[in-house]
Image (cartoon, rainbow, N blue to C red; front, top):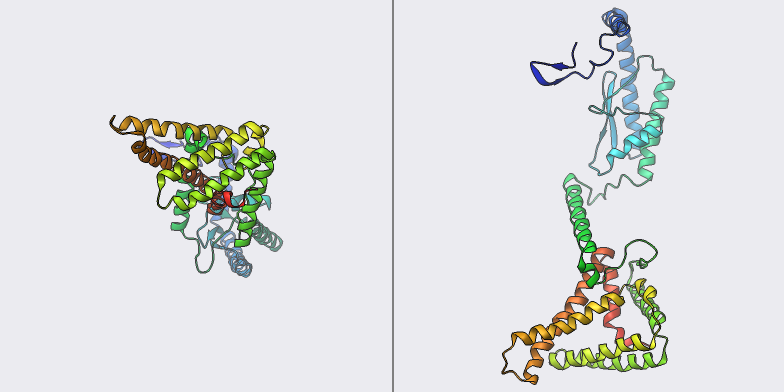
Length: 362
């Protein structure tokens, strides 16, 4: 009586262990085998089998009436729980069952056994515990099985898990890298994480945009001189919305002058507001340094690629294009990170707030 077969190394007997040759174990097994071959044992198994078959049918009726996605099946007194629809969290049922007093085996195929001395009260208690566990799991939201038009399938679960794994892998890489610093990815959790509630209707979208404008104004637009500089800057930006369609050079030159005027007002006339900036969805002071570095390096790199015979006016056009690319990188890059972290609607709230900023700024 060994645990392993020397002729077949992969053959393992789980029932052979520490007590395999214990006299008490051997005597008990001998007594059971003698009883199992007696007419009384056959009568007992037949009686319990009929009772348990009735229990299985009645339990399935109750499960169907409660619209629970499980059924029970048996072979004599051996039974198991079958899930009728695919689901990501079916494994959670074992913990709900344990909480109700039904302990599943931690190893094997998930089969359960019925004791031969079960009474009608025991069967009734077992059915009630199973129903309570299943209903609690459903009410807690672990059985989201989709809709009648689009039910959850094994393929949709695999696709969903694949997308989530890819998303979290990309976000982890971005968050731990320099790109999150450059494009100012806000914190997702903690006291410094922005409050981002996706709007459901067009009116809620408008109200969310205006709320963020108000928060931005309250955080860093209280000085009168700064407000006047923002008025001039906003006027230039509105003019740029017209010139961008035909004159990129003029647009970028005036736009950078307007941006310099706007940020100078913050740096000179406004008190530090780093904590307030972190609670907004836009760029903070640190990321604005990267923006300035981008606008500074872009013309240098562009001019190094031009020939020495190009005059100042001729060089402005390629420099303006490089500034436009830098602008698109920071604006669209930040929008993309917001989309990945908070969803499309929140990203559009920030983008809408930025685009309409010159039109509504106070």
